[in-house]
Image 1 (tube, rainbow, N blue to C red):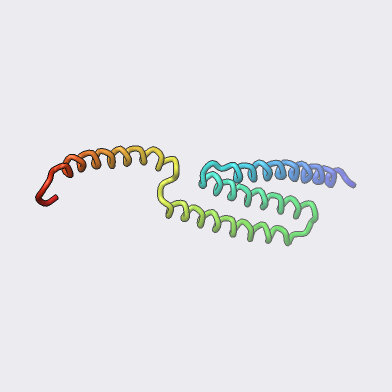
Image 2: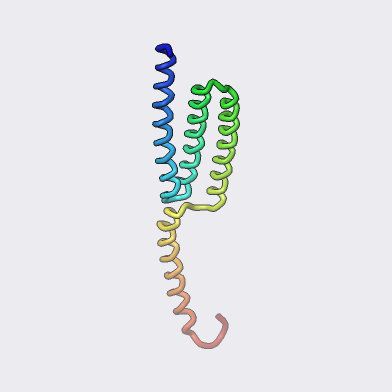
Length: 127
C-alpha cells in the first residue's frame, strides 16, 4: 500500500467515525425534541449526514454509483424538508407562542365573561 492510499484509508476511516458519532447525536436530537421544528431540523441533518456517509463509502470502495444515490437522497431529503415546513406552517402557531398568547386570550375571555355576567343578572326583557 502506497502512502496516498494509506492517507486515503486513514482519512475515510476518520470521516466514517466522525459521521457515525454525528448520526447518533442527531438521532438523539430527533427523539428528544422538544419541538416539532427541532425534529424537522434533525431529520434534515440526518439526511445530510447520510449523504456524507454514502460519499465516504463511495470514495472508499471506488464504486461511483453511490454518488448518484447520494444525489437522489439529497433531492428527496430537500423535498421532505419543504413538506415538513409546509405542514408546520399549516398547523399555525408553535406551542411556545400558543402558551404566551394563550394567556392573553384566556384573560380576555375571562374579562368578557365577567362583563357578560353582569348583563345576565337583569330579569325580564330581551337580552
